[in-house]
Image (spheres, helix red, strand yellow):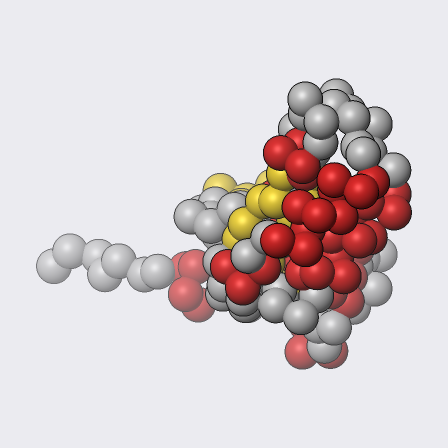
Length: 168
Protein backbone atom coordinates (compact mmCIF):
# COMPACT_ATOMS: atom_id res chain seq x y z
CA UNK A 1 0.00 0.00 0.00
CA UNK A 2 1.37 3.44 -1.00
CA UNK A 3 1.94 6.13 1.58
CA UNK A 4 -0.82 8.69 1.77
CA UNK A 5 0.14 12.16 0.52
CA UNK A 6 -0.42 14.74 3.22
CA UNK A 7 -0.76 18.42 2.41
CA UNK A 8 1.24 19.98 5.23
CA UNK A 9 0.54 23.49 3.99
CA UNK A 10 -3.20 23.03 4.57
CA UNK A 11 -2.54 21.57 8.04
CA UNK A 12 -0.16 24.35 9.08
CA UNK A 13 -1.10 27.31 11.24
CA UNK A 14 0.06 29.73 8.57
CA UNK A 15 -2.29 32.52 7.54
CA UNK A 16 -1.93 33.85 4.01
CA UNK A 17 -2.55 37.56 3.50
CA UNK A 18 -3.17 38.48 -0.13
CA UNK A 19 -3.11 42.23 -0.81
CA UNK A 20 -4.86 41.57 -4.09
CA UNK A 21 -7.99 40.71 -2.09
CA UNK A 22 -8.13 44.36 -1.01
CA UNK A 23 -7.63 45.85 -4.46
CA UNK A 24 -10.26 48.60 -4.85
CA UNK A 25 -12.61 48.12 -7.77
CA UNK A 26 -12.92 51.02 -10.14
CA UNK A 27 -11.42 52.52 -13.24
CA UNK A 28 -8.01 54.21 -13.02
CA UNK A 29 -7.33 57.24 -15.20
CA UNK A 30 -4.40 59.57 -15.72
CA UNK A 31 -5.09 63.23 -16.40
CA UNK A 32 -2.08 64.85 -18.08
CA UNK A 33 -2.14 68.65 -17.80
CA UNK A 34 0.47 69.12 -20.54
CA UNK A 35 -2.33 69.48 -23.07
CA UNK A 36 -3.48 72.62 -21.29
CA UNK A 37 -0.05 74.26 -21.33
CA UNK A 38 1.21 76.55 -24.06
CA UNK A 39 3.46 74.37 -26.25
CA UNK A 40 3.21 71.76 -23.48
CA UNK A 41 5.49 73.74 -21.18
CA UNK A 42 4.14 77.14 -20.17
CA UNK A 43 1.10 77.65 -17.99
CA UNK A 44 -0.87 80.71 -18.95
CA UNK A 45 -3.45 81.12 -16.23
CA UNK A 46 -6.24 82.63 -18.31
CA UNK A 47 -5.97 79.92 -21.01
CA UNK A 48 -5.55 77.19 -18.42
CA UNK A 49 -8.73 78.21 -16.62
CA UNK A 50 -10.56 78.36 -19.98
CA UNK A 51 -9.52 74.79 -20.81
CA UNK A 52 -10.71 73.63 -17.39
CA UNK A 53 -14.07 75.36 -17.73
CA UNK A 54 -14.72 73.75 -21.13
CA UNK A 55 -13.45 70.26 -20.29
CA UNK A 56 -15.79 67.23 -19.91
CA UNK A 57 -15.24 66.23 -16.28
CA UNK A 58 -18.04 63.67 -16.23
CA UNK A 59 -15.75 61.15 -17.92
CA UNK A 60 -14.08 60.76 -14.50
CA UNK A 61 -17.26 59.72 -12.69
CA UNK A 62 -16.43 57.06 -10.09
CA UNK A 63 -12.83 56.80 -11.32
CA UNK A 64 -9.58 56.92 -9.40
CA UNK A 65 -7.53 59.72 -10.97
CA UNK A 66 -3.82 60.51 -11.07
CA UNK A 67 -3.05 64.05 -12.21
CA UNK A 68 0.38 64.63 -13.70
CA UNK A 69 2.37 66.51 -16.31
CA UNK A 70 4.34 64.31 -18.71
CA UNK A 71 6.58 67.15 -19.92
CA UNK A 72 9.38 68.86 -18.03
CA UNK A 73 7.16 71.89 -17.43
CA UNK A 74 7.21 73.54 -14.04
CA UNK A 75 3.56 73.47 -13.03
CA UNK A 76 2.66 75.49 -9.93
CA UNK A 77 0.91 73.63 -7.11
CA UNK A 78 -2.22 75.73 -7.42
CA UNK A 79 -2.78 74.38 -10.95
CA UNK A 80 -3.14 70.81 -9.65
CA UNK A 81 -5.35 72.13 -6.86
CA UNK A 82 -7.54 73.89 -9.42
CA UNK A 83 -7.85 70.69 -11.47
CA UNK A 84 -8.83 68.88 -8.26
CA UNK A 85 -11.69 71.33 -7.69
CA UNK A 86 -13.08 70.32 -11.08
CA UNK A 87 -12.54 66.57 -10.55
CA UNK A 88 -13.77 66.32 -6.97
CA UNK A 89 -17.50 66.12 -7.73
CA UNK A 90 -16.87 63.12 -10.00
CA UNK A 91 -13.78 61.13 -9.00
CA UNK A 92 -13.56 58.66 -6.11
CA UNK A 93 -9.94 59.56 -5.36
CA UNK A 94 -7.49 62.11 -6.77
CA UNK A 95 -3.71 62.22 -6.39
CA UNK A 96 -0.92 64.15 -8.01
CA UNK A 97 1.52 61.71 -9.57
CA UNK A 98 1.63 58.43 -11.44
CA UNK A 99 -0.71 55.46 -11.44
CA UNK A 100 1.65 53.80 -8.96
CA UNK A 101 1.34 56.85 -6.69
CA UNK A 102 -2.43 56.50 -6.98
CA UNK A 103 -2.36 52.80 -6.08
CA UNK A 104 -0.03 53.51 -3.15
CA UNK A 105 -2.39 56.17 -1.85
CA UNK A 106 -5.36 53.81 -2.12
CA UNK A 107 -3.51 51.09 -0.22
CA UNK A 108 -2.31 53.55 2.44
CA UNK A 109 -5.94 54.16 3.38
CA UNK A 110 -6.94 50.52 3.13
CA UNK A 111 -4.08 49.30 5.31
CA UNK A 112 -4.46 52.13 7.82
CA UNK A 113 -8.11 51.09 8.30
CA UNK A 114 -7.36 47.37 8.62
CA UNK A 115 -8.26 45.64 11.86
CA UNK A 116 -5.28 43.34 12.36
CA UNK A 117 -6.41 41.90 15.69
CA UNK A 118 -7.29 38.59 14.02
CA UNK A 119 -3.59 38.20 13.14
CA UNK A 120 -2.41 38.44 16.75
CA UNK A 121 0.21 35.79 17.55
CA UNK A 122 -0.22 34.21 14.11
CA UNK A 123 2.33 33.13 11.53
CA UNK A 124 1.57 35.18 8.43
CA UNK A 125 2.65 34.82 4.83
CA UNK A 126 2.18 37.92 2.75
CA UNK A 127 1.45 36.56 -0.70
CA UNK A 128 3.89 37.94 -3.25
CA UNK A 129 2.42 37.22 -6.66
CA UNK A 130 -0.55 39.19 -7.87
CA UNK A 131 -2.35 39.73 -11.13
CA UNK A 132 -3.46 43.23 -10.19
CA UNK A 133 -1.09 46.21 -9.91
CA UNK A 134 -0.48 46.09 -6.15
CA UNK A 135 2.21 48.74 -5.55
CA UNK A 136 5.48 47.72 -3.86
CA UNK A 137 4.85 50.21 -1.04
CA UNK A 138 1.72 48.31 -0.04
CA UNK A 139 3.87 45.36 1.04
CA UNK A 140 5.96 47.62 3.25
CA UNK A 141 2.89 49.28 4.75
CA UNK A 142 1.31 45.91 5.49
CA UNK A 143 4.50 44.54 7.06
CA UNK A 144 4.71 47.59 9.29
CA UNK A 145 1.05 47.21 10.28
CA UNK A 146 1.35 43.49 11.09
CA UNK A 147 4.65 43.54 13.00
CA UNK A 148 3.20 44.65 16.35
CA UNK A 149 0.71 41.75 16.40
CA UNK A 150 2.13 38.89 14.33
CA UNK A 151 4.19 36.03 15.70
CA UNK A 152 6.07 35.87 12.42
CA UNK A 153 5.85 37.33 8.93
CA UNK A 154 7.03 35.72 5.72
CA UNK A 155 6.81 36.69 2.07
CA UNK A 156 5.94 34.52 -0.91
CA UNK A 157 4.03 31.25 -0.98
CA UNK A 158 3.73 28.59 1.72
CA UNK A 159 5.93 26.24 -0.33
CA UNK A 160 8.71 28.81 -0.79
CA UNK A 161 8.50 31.70 1.62
CA UNK A 162 11.15 34.14 2.74
CA UNK A 163 11.23 34.82 6.50
CA UNK A 164 11.04 38.54 7.27
CA UNK A 165 10.19 38.91 10.93
CA UNK A 166 9.91 36.77 14.04
CA UNK A 167 8.86 38.15 17.38
CA UNK A 168 11.28 37.31 20.18
